[in-house]
Amino acid sequence: MSESKKYSRLYAPGIKLTEDFWLHDKALLDRIRKLFADDRDVELVLFDGISQDRLYLVAELNEREAHLQLVTDMHRNLPEQEVYLMWDYLGTEEDYSVIARGVEAGASHFLPLVTEASSPKAFDIEHMQSAIIKTIEEGMRSDIPNLRAPLNASTAIMQLHEKVRLYSVKRQQNNQPIIEKSDISEDSSPVGIFVSFSNEPLTTDSIVTQLDPNMYGEIGIVGTNVVTELVQ
Image (cartoon, rainbow, N blue to C red):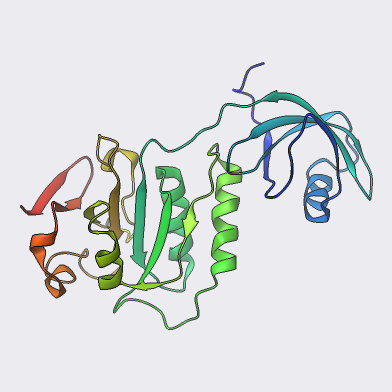
């Protein structure tokens, strides 16, 4: 069976995705009914974000349950590299733009930062998590990235400096950050990427001087296919 065909994909946490089962989860049933209305013998992908992406035939659908029959296991699409994506939390639609681009670029961890550019508006982690899942469902990734509550930028660096190589991302002229797969290191080692909406990217002058620069193996500015080292 070709996997080039586009199927509707639904995240199914906590559901045991067996070969033949009756689904009773109300939230998932509502979503399936919205997708297919009165159609029968339709197919969709359910994935648990952990180990399974499975294509099912919806053999029967009613108000109380759906009968799902396994068609095939799908190829799981996972990021090749562990990427920590950090940005100034603004409390605006720009935050969701960062998430959408980050998901597409393969980010595995989202860490909103509290900086001078940040909004005092409360961080809605549930709404932000829903945005991540929606983007994952609309794409082809099989994993669900981790989302953290906002951190002070210095705290984030202190927590990550021994785990990852740290880079800062330049903005485009339309104020949208550049986040491309080509910007991420070619090897498979973990990296941390900063996206800044302030006048300048997060650099050694704006953030790292609060700490000891000797702790870093490499800090750079990520542009389009270009990494410029700031600290040796």
